[in-house]
Each structure stands twice: as structure tokens, then as C-alpha cells.
Amino acid sequence: MSTEGSTSGLHHDYHDNLYILLRGRKRFRLYSPGDVDSMYTRGTLLKVHPNGRINYEGDETTAYGADLHSDQAASAFSAQQRAEKEVYLASCSQCVTYDSVYGCVAGGS
Image 1 (cartoon, rainbow, N blue to C red):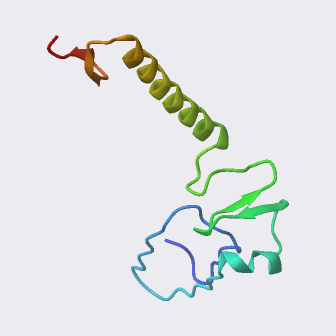
Image 2 (image 1 turned 30 degrees about the horizontal axis):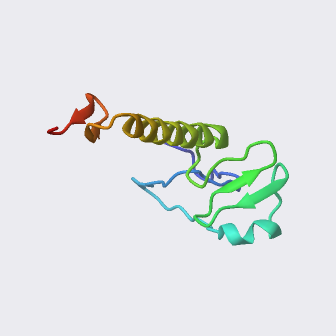
């Protein structure tokens, strides 16, 4: 429980919030992420994603908050898996389908 008259400084939250007031009153002032150029921020503004996520210099993320390098690594891994599958299928003349667990599933010859 907070004391009467307590306040929170202007800030932005990265995730959705659920606020439940048990007693008393609370006033919120909500600002659009599009107003960020008119705000005094800590750090140098780099980007505002379409979903409203704000990025500052030195802390760039994807729109949903993931580190950019982890997204790039996941994309590279998926591309590698697709390429390996295509090479394998091309080298296996009896392959009809490819199963990620069992590999080549041979058809009738």
C-alpha cells in the first residue's frame, strides 16, 4: 500500500499492465508513443516501433522486445535448416518426403 499523495515519475512500460485499485483514487496521464519527441527522455531516442515500443541508442530491440542479434541468429538458423533439407532431398533420388526427426522417407522404387 502506498501513502496518500505518493506519485510515480513519468515513465514508459514495455509490457501491458493491469492496475487494480483497492481503495482511494489514482489518476493516470497517458501519452501516445507518437508524442515522444515532445518529452524529456533519458537517453537518445532511436526509434518508435509501430506497436509503440520505444528504442534508445545502445538498446535497440525488435518491436516485441527481443534483442536484434537473437532475431538474426534465429533467422539464420532457420535458413540453414531449409538449405540443408533441400541439399539432402536433391541428393536422395528415392526421397519422397523429408521428416525432421527421421530424415528421408523413401517412396516405392
